[in-house]
Image 1 (cartoon, rainbow, N blue to C red):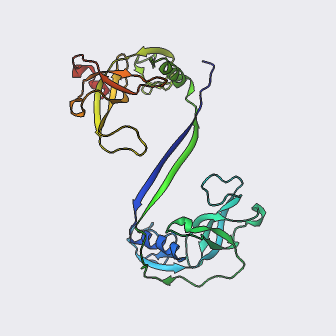
Image 2: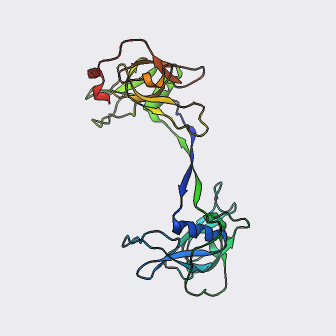
Amino acid sequence: MSEILTAPLVVEFPFTRSLGPVQSAFLTGLRERVVLGVRTTDGRVLVPPVEYDPYTADEIRELVEVGATGAVTTWAWNPAPRPRQPLTTPFAWVLVTLDGADTALLHALDAPGPDAVRTGMRVRVRWAAERTGAITDIACFEPYEGGEAGPATPHTGVFADPVTGITTPARLDYTYAPGRAQSRHLAALARHTTVGERCPECRRVYVPPRGACPTCGVATGEQVEVGPRGTVTTYCIVNIKARNAAIDVPYVYAHIALDGADLALHGRIAGIPCDEVRMGLRVEPVWTEGARHPDHYRPTGEPDAAYDTYKELL
């Protein structure tokens, strides 16, 4: 196959977590233009704060306020900011030890160029105009010519309307190149057929193929058409609807051993009530127009497969 397949892919999801008393105080403090750290049993001040001492694993709750100024401990220049990064113009990623703290905080430094950045330079927080209780309440750091602030001072960590939870969007943009084996597999799917590859040593047929046998570690090259029918080896009933998914819950997702394959692939089961899906159920693919993979699998009406015929594929 001469065509090299590539495709842009995006993995994106919201990560939601609740906050304990330490993280809640830290983020709420940022909203109020206060930077809080936590003091360990041996007197070190950690910023950003954590609930447990990284050396002793002791629970630590003694909150202290540190300065909004500090010194750069190390840095790296970012000449081409990506979307959603703190600044739209070139900037430096910096680790800043704030006055009164013993650990460094990672953030962005707004500087005219890499020649303007150096280890040890003094910087201060530039607060965001609108603050909600997130690390982005620090818009960035900026150069500062003033002196050091005093030592860390005790703080109750008590604020009105504290932040108790956060939702952080996670996103990964990348270009996927499937390689020789999967390119052949995808080309076959476009023809509504399923192709795997056979290992020259153990003679197992793997679908989808990876170009090498996971058991023997040798290259695979012999193409084998499998299916289209197969057997449900195991399954689960999905009751939680994924965001932006067009499929209504509940639905069944299953591992399906296609006839002639020695590895089960996964697919959705439809055309049968969820509580009637079972191990050994014989199924066949249902294709939609223009699709490059089956939309779902449905029962064939055949008798269930005997357990011994698929027990090695569980």
